[in-house]
Image (tube, rainbow, N blue to C red; front, side):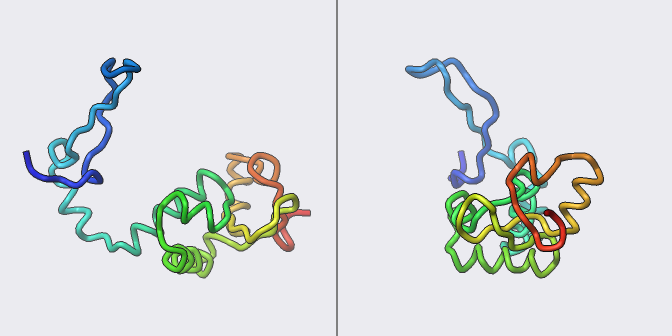
Length: 137
């Protein structure tokens, strides 16, 4: 078997093994998706970070910088650069949480309006109570 890094594996299933009778079975990704490594080679590290952040904020709605650095393990400067790029693209916006201190980042006005129009979530009630200037009371 080739020496693949742990990041090149994915959880295939769960088996009833081990002391708790619950163990993940890992498999090498290219064995099941042989074209994936070549496709992934075209994506830069910066592009991958931006996409991960975009998907993360689609999921959580809003978060603080410390949440991003803790989850992804990126240095603060790298995470900040990626967040600022998404803010510049109007995908994210800096926000103020009405009940918790600190600097927050959330969907931009455009992204929040898009979610509200689609009826996917009532952003200010479901995720966080956040006031974005001119959008939410």
